[in-house]
Length: 194
Image 1 (cartoon, helix red, strand yellow):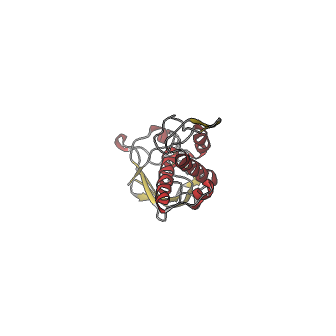
Image 2 (tube, rainbow, N blue to C red):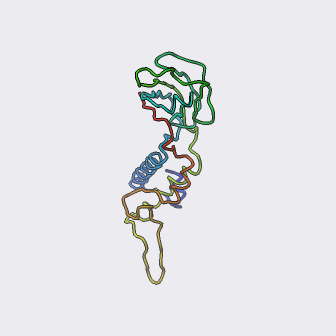
Image 3 (cartoon, one colour):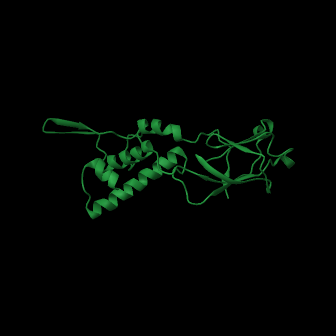
């Protein structure tokens, strides 16, 4: 809230504070949805279980891409309910094993790989925070979503989000490009939260 007030160079009234907080919450949700990441570190660990057959996983040996990053700590890894320690972490979200997670896959079900881990940034990266502030700021400054206006010979053009419509807090194409480096790609092995 204080960051948004500083960005706008003003002090909020109590009513404006509630609106500003709602816009910041919306902007944070939009950013998280776009990057498909939780961003901030949770105080508890998450458990994810891969429950589907993945022929690529069996052919390529042991590679699991955890859905959230950065991975801070992995507490437990189990295969079909049995804890294992013959794995290692590579990079921010890859779990590797020298051979397949289950050999051979039983009845085309594939392995159930369960990983309990802590993930997220201790503090929100600066560029993500700046984008959330910018997105909320756009709605505070231009709540009607006006593209441009001319008053007394002075013309002002506003930044309009990627859709070109005023539907509340949205991301511009430039902001999306900046966030792409944090975005989880479709190539990740899907794991479901238990």
